[in-house]
Amino acid sequence: MTLYHFLIQATFSYLGTFTFGLFINLPKKALNSSSLIGMAGWLLYWFIFKLGYGSILGNFMAALLVGILGLFCSIKKKMPTTMFSSGLVPLVPGASSYQALSAFINNETTIAVSKTIHVAMVAGAIALGYVTAQMIADLIYKRKNV
Image (cartoon, rainbow, N blue to C red; front, side, top):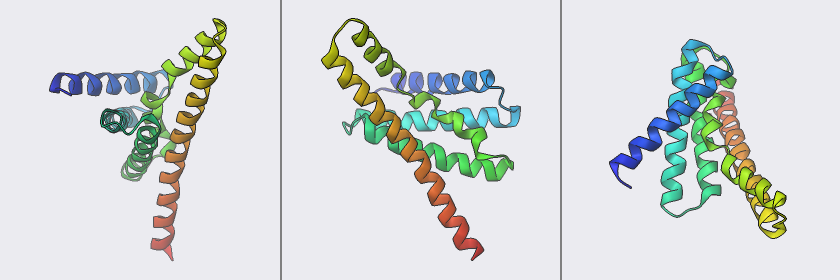
């Protein structure tokens, strides 16, 4: 991992999240924050993956980070947390989904099933990480109000 690779990963994860935010018409005051959150989530995933812990744990931890940062930004900017959930976009397993579909089309059933299961596990890890962040926020909020 060199500084060059880090800058490439950071730049393109930010730009990918930013353009998706433009595509779904995010408000201007949420666009930069959401893009920075997406970049932070992707970089955490990338570091965990490069350390050899796998894509499932990396996606879970990154989605957890995106959820927590999204909650902080929603409080700071007084906006719904859903405005910052576009930070999950870089984590979506698009390449694996494409490979699974390609394997199905080419009648490589074993590879196709394996890739499909992996995509489902990654998607589940992303969902579980994001929901865990929401649950942590609910627990903290309830303790403050009790």
